[in-house]
Amino acid sequence: MFRLRSETIVFWGLISVVLVTSAIRIRLLSVPLERDEGEYAYAGQLILQGIPPYTLAYNMKMPGIYAIYTGILFVFGQTQTGIHLGLLVFNLAAIALIYFLANKLFGQIAACAAAASYAILSVGMKVQGVFANSEHFLLVPALGGLLLLLMFTENRKLNFLLYSGLLLGVSFIVKQFAIAFILFGFFFLIYSELREKNRLTGVLRDIVLFLFCVTAPFLLTCLLFWMLGVFDKFWFWTVQYSREYVTQRSLAESLPGLRMIFPPIVFSAILIWVCALVGFVCLFIKKEYRTRSIFMVAFLFFSVLSVVPGFFFRAHYFVLMLPAIALLFGILFAGLWNQSSGKAAAVFIAAIVFLFSLFQQRTFFFRLTPLQAARHVYGSNPFPEALQIAKYISDNSLYFETVAIIGSEPEIYFYSKRHSATGYIYMFPMLERQRYAEQMQQDMMKQIEKNQPKYIVVSFGPGWLSAEFRGKQQTPNNILPWAQKFTGEFYKQVGLVELTPQSTHYYWGPQLVEHLPSSGMFIMIFERKINLL
Image (cartoon, rainbow, N blue to C red; front, side, top):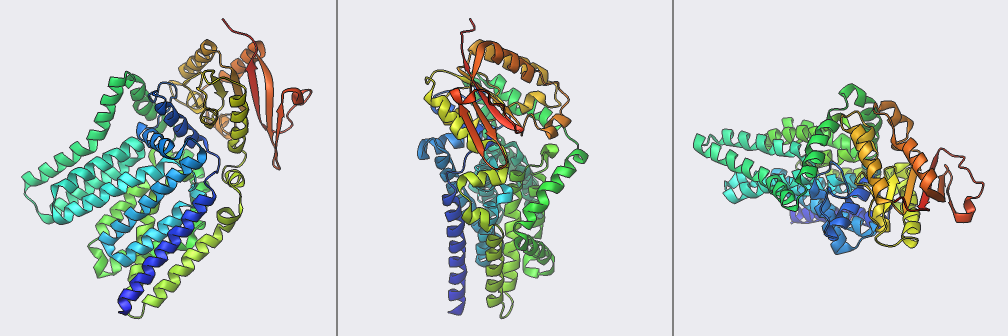
């Protein structure tokens, strides 16, 4: 009787943690979109209008994330609140999948602890957890695929293998980083086949079927874009340019960034990470876990590998490591639980760990407004300001008139519901150390000159004009001098948004008279004064 009552308490503890983390997400649903979210939202908006990806918005992201955003916008509405509500749904799905995966590996007690720890880790400020980055969405099909693969290795039902491969293949078309989880699945399948000493013909059959199902979603995606007539652009951006992107940096160049990003992620929930480390040790010293040690060690290794491609370490990339950390935490909790008289100690330790992890980030979780939260995470990047700029553009233009943003703020297109005058919605690719950069600059300038946008928005400050980015680029910046000449001849300035450490100041129309920005971060809005043709 006590065993049943204790397990029920643990399960309701999980529910309580999930409710708290969901409440945090709900409180911050209206947080302004950051750049990647803006790109996905704009692409999803275009799809709803019948415009395929890679026609009016170029980037190396795979189309699966655009399809997910399209569904979210359709169901929850074309606002940042709707997008973050969709994120909440996917986050709950990931929590549930971690529960089922941990339950299959280590039992119900470990499953509750793992799912609860992931709920807290994935909402963390240091991994930008309340923003709808692609990593959150990638994990749902990836974890589902790994769960089905584990089930296949136990009962040999072929349907589980087929669906596992398909889900892992879907995760790849959400983001290329999913290749690490596909490699893990391939490794674990071969390991399981060898461990069971299956016949060679059966092993080859399973491997071929798995690989076929993994590649099927990508092949179908290629076929779809070929039928839509945009395969060339799809292939260039997601394969050719993507290859250029991931070969720009060496590990030595990226280590300073890694040292700046990773330690704060660990220290923001330090007790969970320490417990996960102890859980890793438990894999090898407790008999009941040794049979699963290969799975966990390999899963942790490939999870770390998923963050590494290109050596561009961004905070939200580390979301891909969190399921492995959560499973290791679950191992420790279950190990304590299974000790004689260990149930009370396990519950007490888990309660302290979770409460302290929430306490560490209490300001972000419970006090900051959505606008303050965006500023707290992204500093002086103009994500809150994009809302006001987009409102001005929307109020003062017709739906068919276009906008060009000389900067990297695609969220303005989404908010204003206006098309870009150029497919180049980011400045970064055309200033990087890659062979297509100068041609991209020329293409962008020609597209803007041809399409005569009603408004041109020029962003100065963090991002493409930052000192850090300028110091690493090797391609000359021809865009800025061209933009200054082009706007000076054919456009008039109608707005200025100036960001200071304390506040943001907006100047529109007559307010611009004799006002010059005094800070290093400002955005200029220009309106076309004459037709160019």
